[in-house]
Image (cartoon, rainbow, N blue to C red; front, side, top):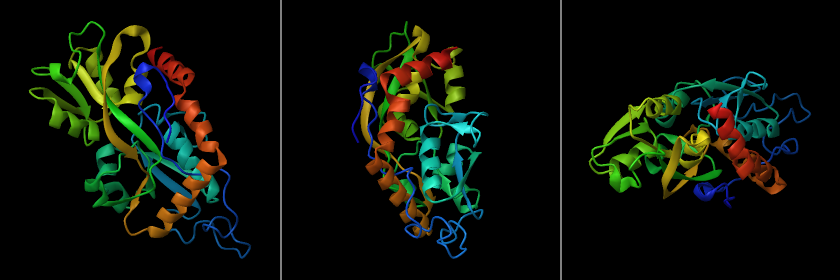
Length: 283
């Protein structure tokens, strides 16, 4: 996955992806009725016949956000990815807003709430104990966001400071491991984190670079450090649903090979896209 330069700070995210909104030929992945009346996805052990049900922790732009104008009611890079997967498999897409902790732990999937968790989720060995992951579709970095008038210039300056992180994320784990002497405060989502730093309740936020970039609009906040953690996002599924994992990976590969992945990437992570998203959020 190649990284487009978004800004000096945005050499953050690259991609490792694979999929194709072009859809496969009938019979390749169980998509369509194969001409014999079989329902689309009938061999994929879906929560709801004919529908790919996806859980995501919203909002977390640019990966997922609310959008009443879209067919699913949601928008974002992850949403477009799973929409392409659903289209390729001949399925409808349904998206549910869920807590990230329930997604990364496997509780939501194992409880039958959804077929896939698509929520900027890093593939880790710990999560793989409870979840099956697709091939990686996005590489990311962590980053440190502070007010522009802050004296904090790096993670080394966080001793005695309050640092906001999202509960259950790799950003939280990285902060606990590397921010010596900091008071780490966990929040359920990015929305609460950003409200906290705006209100002066925390001194810094440590989380995924693309998300922090959105918060730099208006000049009140800046990213002072990026951290290369070799993180790759994957779509999470139940461990025993190997048919769905294989079908999703086929769609990811087709999406990459068709060039549609690059188009989606540029839509959200080109320099213009990031600037537009930041301005919209700031407004």
